[in-house]
Image (tube, rainbow, N blue to C red; front, side):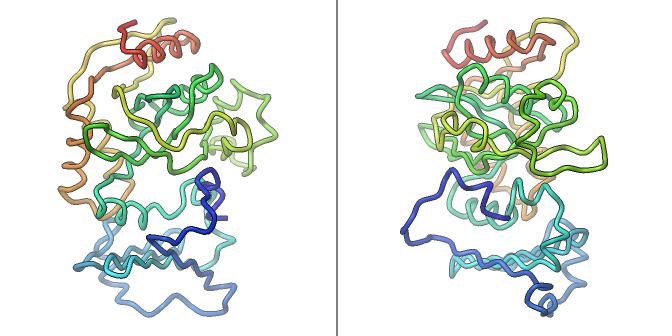
Length: 295
């Protein structure tokens, strides 16, 4: 349940740098471990950190994450694995991976990324800005997928982007656009407004890329005209779009998150793109920016 999202990154017979042990309390007939729940609750979604130790309790889904940076060892303990919401399967272990990877100089970030064989562009923006549909449209037109919801950003002269999850979270509108992929939906719900979970490895295995060098950051928004509009932007706008939703969704935020995102972004060109209703025109504009030309 927790490893399918990472299936495209599987490497056999390699000694792990981080070990994560997962535990289903109901299956093992043991309760969640005794901790100072009051302290965890008082810190809300921020979690609680002390030295090399990070604790986070997600009350609404009954999941406890614990990370020991000294031992590179983590535990993910759930009250009942069968009651976990569908999105956990799509982007599992965010809390643990986010804190551990940041300690090693990379930032797990709420952003999409698509590219060719040599480089990629980041698709930034809050929920509802068009990242999912734009990512899918780009893949259908031959570009590679690194992520539609989360990517790992590593600062440096190369500004590397790493794929983390190979999952897709489609709105009902996206499903209506692409009904031919209905058979790949893995979570059926009676709620017509709920998103659907799919895995790119099932649909476009040849289009998934593990890592690529970033060539630009594009902040997306939804426009109402047929063709997209492109504007040159600045690092401040990109950082706002990269950091705001990342900080909202990942606990243990500190100034290192902002520092890593700034270091990653400072050497890249920045654009704002109002998406048009014509999805093919959006893809052509992104391909132009990917090649280094202004559409």
